[in-house]
Length: 131
Image 1 (tube, rainbow, N blue to C red):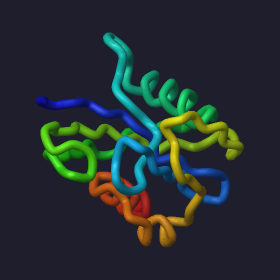
Image 2 (cartoon, rainbow, N blue to C red):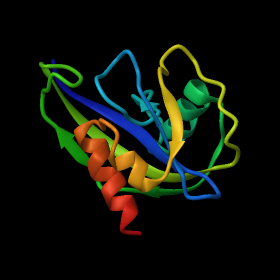
Image 3 (tube, rainbow, N blue to C red):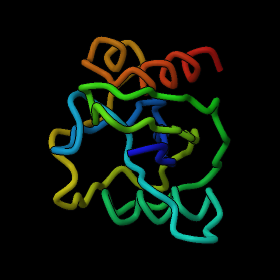
Image 4 (cartoon, one colour):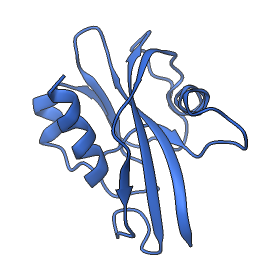
């Protein structure tokens, strides 16, 4: 299928807990996010996708390290994903999820690293833990 760009947010709250979620689209915990629309800035994509998926607004966006995820049975065996995560702060922790969100919660970094995270998300959580 080729390469697909995904822009997501590792969201933290005032207590430094991280929002993580599952989705019917993948196997494991990941981040809210998605594909950019044509000519859409990355920051606008992540804000739009988070608003659509979990109904919250973000502030303090900081771009994290881009991760290349080769085809995998965690998501899709024919697609390479270019994952562009951002660290962001939630303006509220009240979640209104859409049908793309399965299990979800707010987790400490220690709790998050014990979850079955998607490989690129584990790297992003580990990077966040070093801030």
